[in-house]
Image (cartoon, rainbow, N blue to C red; front, top):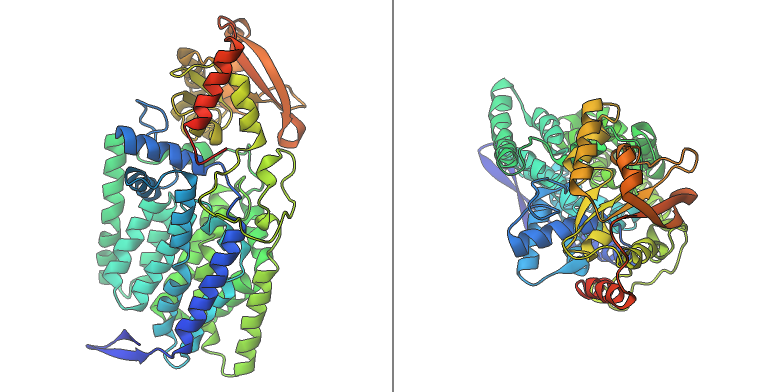
Length: 533
């Protein structure tokens, strides 16, 4: 096997030693096995993708609720991919998880393709990223999440691989296409193009190529959603509720987890001329920096295992492999690689837990180390909370009604024929705008008017135990309005998030349905999604 790399007008053909594909394949097998251990673990934002993809596949409508034009997912490309799979009969969370794992399994080989031309005299160093990432809990867990993280990671690495092969135009186009994969794509495209350009003329040419897919997406957003940015921009960029960190703390958490990979090797790369002069290493460094810049600007994230920085792991590993190519003492290189493997192995904390979603208040317990007997096939358990809320809502909510929910995820996926107002604004335009600027009186009025215009049959709100007011800005302005006290009554209360009460309200003009009818509604909703139980 040989790899062609650019070398002036001709192409230099590099041999690939037999041990290289063996090492990459072995590391990939370990990564997949590590991911399967966490396969039963589910982050509920995947259900936002699945409900939107289901609507697109079955009704031709890209939206969370029928008739609404709100871009409520964080990846256009992944939503379209799941919708296409749904149309072909590959449906539900098992299909989404299998697709993301298949995508994530390509990352080690893509890293090897990116590194090999950059280390012509040390071919086995192309296996360094695969080996360094094989045991990484964050990469493995998100690879099997069913969300857009694996596609985003692979797309970032593919940009570097194209640059490594000397295909700068294709790399620039793919850099622009990153905007279709994640909202921070344009930021990475800007820094990536700057890293690839050799002079002003090249910069302009590559920038125009990268701008084409961004312009196409922007035009599509204007036509379909009447906005130039996804709704998640408004819901997440300034919101503080539901985040575990600010931007600095989030970045520090990732750096502390993999200091050799994310700190020592990239800093060494900045100081080496051979790294700075290598287009793939330069691009990987630029995308790595852009990933951290985005985190610092956007702030933290409530999801576990540093989702927003998963793509930084293989990018840093690519840089690290090029750095090690400059180390002439072989035992030092081997010691660094061994350290990277040990460092990855030490990330095995609650990312391996498969059962935490069953208990609302316990989320850091190691359950077991073995994969499920039938991964992607057996139904996935609903969280305790949506299971409880489903039964609580059934007497008051009928198909076609509206529910105002503090969150969106599993419950709306199960209740597919019910529309939802989203308290934090991920799929709700007015609530999202208010999350971005919670003190804006006009946005408060817009969210309040949208709530009372919808007249939800039921409201689910999490109240701050110290103030008695909802965490959601949109729900806060609605519940403070005198019309709410007249029009809705409390029907249930249970503890959630840190002991704060989750309160269910029903409209006062709705009498609870007869017990048998409520049971039939709940059963019909559950049976409509055989992929969860």
